[in-house]
Every structure is written in structure tokens, then in C-alpha cells.
Amino acid sequence: MMGVLNHLSTLLLLSLLPPALSHVVKKFSDVPQCKTFFLMETTPNLPGILVDGTVKDQNRYKPICQLFKNTYRFATLYDTTNKIPVFSAYTFTGCIPGRPDERWMMEPQLNGENNNPNMENMGGGIYNNQAGNNDYAQDVRRNPTDFKDVNRGHLFPSSHACSLDTQESTFTLTNIVPQDRTFNGGSWRKMEEHVREKLMSDCISNNGIKAYVVTGAVASKSNTLNNRVNIPDRMWTAYCCYNNKKKKWMAEAHWGWNKKEDEGKILNPETLGALEDMLNKHYQGKDGPVKVFPGDCPRYT
Image (cartoon, rainbow, N blue to C red; front, side, top):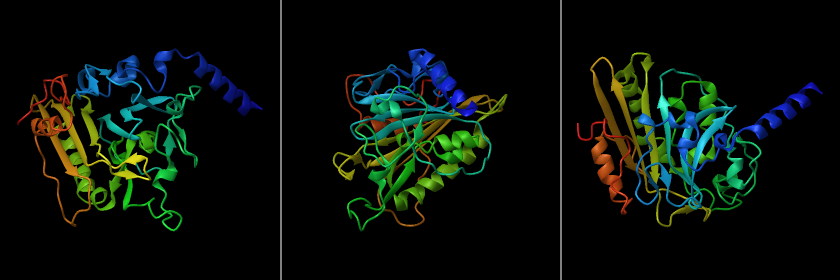
């Protein structure tokens, strides 16, 4: 009985929360805690998609303040047409927690379920506005088109999270794209390990380690999983931080093709400016150039 009462109390509390605290929002700035995942509380500029913090097509692209166990963990801009994230943004603060159980989750509010802003464990259903477990089914005997040699690839990697709860929160399919197995387990995995080491050494602040990271996916034109979930052509990531010891801003970027690759391939570090130049070829419009981070981050050094 006490458990039922506690559950009812939680539902009542959530129902009383103001709209600005909802999981899926109109702007990331609607939630004060969500803004902190972006350097200087400034979201990336992606022409035609996200400009000056405002989503251009609000029926298609959904800002998600990723809420897990009533705590905001990171931020994601989600494409409900391609059913993959455009990017996820998070802060890196060090720590080496253990790996949590992989319980794949979904965002109920993308399905019009507004009673709970927390991500939920995923069932076996088909969802109109997001990917589901069935889209990543691995039973090739049941449907040979299900597999296509891809797996669930994180944008915000669990290895970059500072607590087990935050690690667990990364296992939502709104933070996942279909990633070629050899790429995800090869050069991309090695890049994530390299970036983690760089963040630990480059991003020393007065209060320990603090860095801002944005990781994104460039959607393909027609390559899909189950004719539903876009298999992106490219993956990219960048970080920026202020090194208090060196008294200067530091930045680095990486990107790679999401396709089968030979063992031993490495994604070399690139400048933030080179990444933005590459992304400008994919995101074109009258809304200015791509800008992943605000002006303090070095572009070509």
C-alpha cells in the first residue's frame, strides 16, 4: 500500500510541474538545467534546422532535455522523420564509473504521452516518431532486412558519463543511430577513448575537469534500417573547454564515414573550424554558417 501511495504521490507531483519542465520542449532554454549542457548556454547553429536556439521545423525536430530519475542528464535534438538524433550535447567531468546494465529506453512524450517526462523502459512496439527495439532486431531468420551489419551507436557514449545513473541514461534510442559494426567497434571506439584522455588532460578547471561536447550524425539520403530508421552517412564530434593551467581555450574535432572499415583505422584529430567547414556542405541555408560552439573556442588551432 505504501508503494502505491508513493507512486500516486509521484504522479501528482509530476502533474503539477510547470510546462517548462517537460521532457520534450520547444527550446532547450525552456529548462534552466538543460541550458547548462551547452557552452555559454549557446546551442549549435545548423542552417535550416536550429538557428539562434530556435528549431525551424518544430513538427519534425524535437529538442529533448534528457530526464532520467528526475535529473537532467544531457540534451538531444531529435529528428522524428529520420528517427535518429541530429546531435547530443553533454558535459564531461571525469570519473570512471562501472558499466551499467543495458536497458534500452524511449521517450514517451514523442508518442504524445505527456504524463511522465522521464525516459521509460522500451517495449517491443513500433513507434511513429522514434526508433524502437524492433528496428534493431537481430533475428535475421525472421526478417533478413532487419540486421544490415549495424548496431546501436551512442552519440553521448556511456564511457564519458560521470555516474552510473547518467551512464544508464545514455541507453535511450533517442541518443542512438544505426552504426556500422566495424566502424562503431573500430575507429569510432578508439576515437572516444582518445577524446576521453584528451578531456582529462586538456580541460582542467578550478573545480576539476569540465568540458562541453557535442556529437552528431549527418543523415543519409535513402539508406535506412527496416525502411524506417535512417542510417547516417557520417558521425562527428567536437569538444571545447577552458584550460585553467594554460589560461586558454582548447578545442578538437573528429568525424568519420559510417561504413565498413579495415581493422586498425584511426580517425585523426581535426580542428573545430575544419569540422564546421565540412558540416557546411551538408547544412546549407540562409541562416548563416554552421557553428558548433560560440566564438571563444579556437577554430583553426
